[in-house]
Amino acid sequence: MECNQGEEESRKRLILDLTRNNFPDWWSKQRQPAFGACLVSISTDGTFSTPWPDLQLPEAEALVLNFETGQKTYALPEFIEKVDKLKALIVTNYSFFQLSYAISMSLDLV
Image 1 (tube, helix red, strand yellow):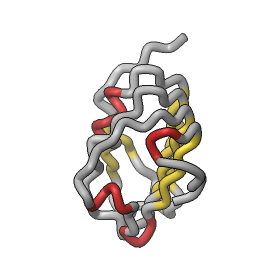
Image 2: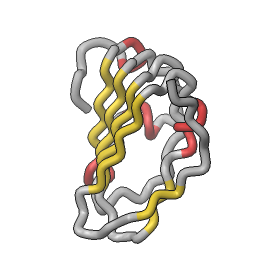
Image 3: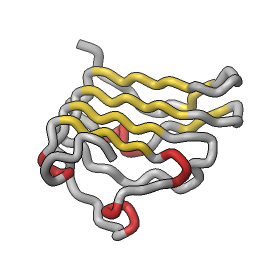
Image 4: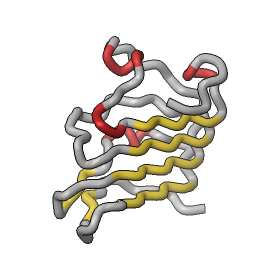
């Protein structure tokens, strides 16, 4: 995990690198804190196989998802629906396959 100054819950930027199924300590402890970050970036790789946690991101305005998958469809994490202040969602796939995203949420555009 980068941006490691202070507690995760109080950071303005939260960057999670979940490549090779390396998870932060709070993930394995089943603790689901509310993060105060305005910018959240999550990166995974082709080995990511764990279900997404129910992240609480009440202050997040920008969410960046970087992932690699060999599947043709990719379901976005369900916690995105509860990010009420979200203004920007950036999804990048750095695999060789073109994907279709399963999005079942509505975003109010300003």
